[in-house]
Length: 437
Image (tube, rainbow, N blue to C red; front, side):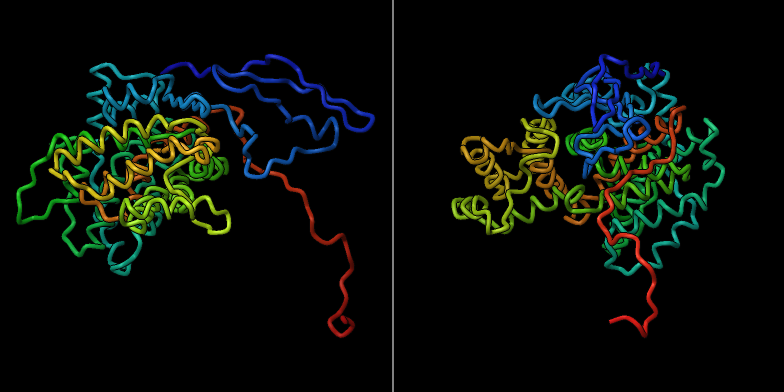
């Protein structure tokens, strides 16, 4: 494992409040913006910082993922996402995120074997699905089943035991494709397909999702590679809402399965994991290229509440590097499936052209993001719209586990406890009900 570097003091910022001053360390990492360390601000000046949504606050030190939103850069452990998506496999990226370095051949074989040997679910977990309504949302199933895994695998919930942490990581990465595929099968009323250890990670997921007992299933290398690439692109993305949720839950010493279930719940929100689903709904509502001008006018009208989904990003103020890879993958998948005249792709291309040339969108840096194309790809590959977010969760699980593991192994880790500005009533005395006006 690569040594975990820590931030270094690169300067000092002096803050004066009233008749007191505080000299606060300015910390710098390997890359990115320097940060003012405000941990002693309250003890020195008697005040806290105020940063709603934590948009200007570093909540932790991490050596896993780096994003430069202005330049459109995404690095996993220092490796550009473009190189990993083109040359690597998802399990190789999983090893990288967990351990800090790319594996050699022996390490990769051992890691792959460990993951493969954990793909089966405890058979009693199978009964969980019988308790859900047939139309239950798959994210509800994921939250429930993953949260319950600690009851079935109590031998890997001691967070202070490195070996148990390792086993829990293998179990989560290996079993989340099975859980995700079975959620779909339950919705569809089809038999559950048990994992096959002769298939690769992506092949196995596609098999469990699409195969049915009466028919032979043959993996398609183009679609398998597309699935692998989708998983790589969504594997981690720094301290986003769901990852921060996992870290927040983990700071209480909760078991890893509970922490991942918390991350799944956070990802469920349409502002986070449901964005690619929203893109598809938007394209369906537009309907035709000829309707785009009227739609664009609605987007520009601040009173219409109509949004251009799949463009812009909380972090990226440039072209999302993942979107370029997704665009290429989209053409490969549609070509393989013989989809030559895909109305949604035509709509997507025209919207992209307008957004990249219209001053309204250019000035607001509303570039296409990864969600813009991923929904089209998943739809073409036969995934129902409500499965888009669960597939996102499948991919992000390895990032959550890596971030959780890094946090647990950090000796400075302590329970998270944000502060607040209280704006309620001042202290007052209780008045009995018969005396209240």
